[in-house]
Length: 595
Image (cartoon, rainbow, N blue to C red; front, side, top):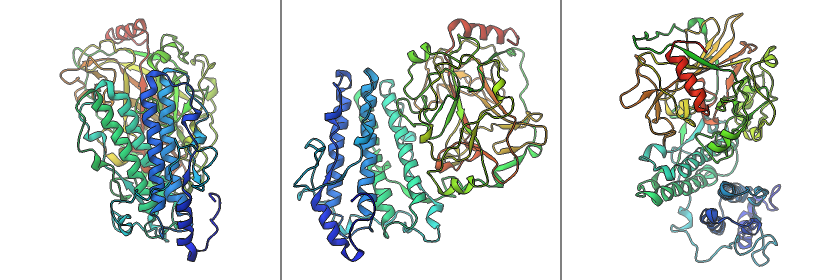
């Protein structure tokens, strides 16, 4: 019944829905497929098993009260599909919890999908632990005719002319409403904030591909309603995590509900155009602050290659640790060969590196750059299942990098296939320069090992420019930086420049927003009061074979909601230098040497 159209005509819709409501939803039993659960993971596993039970009960309640709603695919789109998404998230949390203290269980992903089954004859795979049937007592708090709220912003009815695709879903920002997150709760809070991002991404993907589906209330029933349920669960987990070690935050429940917003307001544009590109010769030169009397003007360059080994994934260890596909865009890496969502400080310290100096096991990463073909722009706007393309070298010299370290034991592109939001052929830079620099007003002190660094904002098109930084330029024009994609003249190559913050609070390796522990110098180059200058990492990527013709010849990977806006370019790093090497870096910089 789940594949193809169900056997009923529109006139028989009520009869069909009455029938399926009587059948109930049956799901595979997850508890039976788990290995012995370590004591340290048991509480988290039990919470998520209970969540699976609750999800099935809610889905069956929805099934029992859905008579007369939706079109031919209503049950799949509005009930079974969202249920599978919720179950997948809960099952993933179970696997992560076990994987933190023991071997992560495999083969659980197939347990997310449920089906309609006769309640009198339950599925062989379903047991009372994971199956619930509609209860006559489980009526909604409002009468059936009021269970579907009107669309939040105007009409959410799909527009046959394509108007729906111009809208995106806008949700309240949860991170901004959280005060200081206790260190003991930080990992769990980060995971759920990343889950909120992923939920919004998936909902917008669904919105973009749902044109013409369902009835007048399809968007509310099949997209916004299930999204609110998922967000409520994630927000509740955030509050619980904080409440275990501090006062539980209040007032977060209202942040679960999202609405439709015009893509031109609080969201990205409808796609890239010529306006997102600029001739680098039209960009004004940037004014540079002058070095002071006590400036530290030396440099140290770490040679780590250009990712010849193809270490790429859709994880983000800083923003979404422990969550596969937490970045929701493809990242390329040099340096540490093991970096993924499940890396720890210990695993990073023990891993191999592409850096020539083996004492540098730092992880350096940035979003993939893609060259677009003539068909890619239309795919980007409408086909969220577009293939990501074949990973290629950035130019004729890309394979001749003699500075790279070992390519063996590389953790390759394990989940980049999950990135379906971006189109075009991924290309590698032909050179990657990792330069540690000084401070314009003072000497620098050693940065701590495992310091997290972020530059830019992957959601700048939606969030605004506060944390965005211009990164683009061209060879021969590096005194000009722009937040648009640059068109370089003949003989000039595309360049991306990422300056990391370099004023450390002296205590923390990370912070709740991943920024306040390490901030940028002010306009004069001085560090703010209460911080100390540490070596500033500058990552410079050069591409020697990027086309300049067409309206959108190239773009960086990003969230679907950001439409590959150039202002969203960003990068990250985790410092894993030995103490000896870090001291060498500091001496080179403070003594004015170029090492």
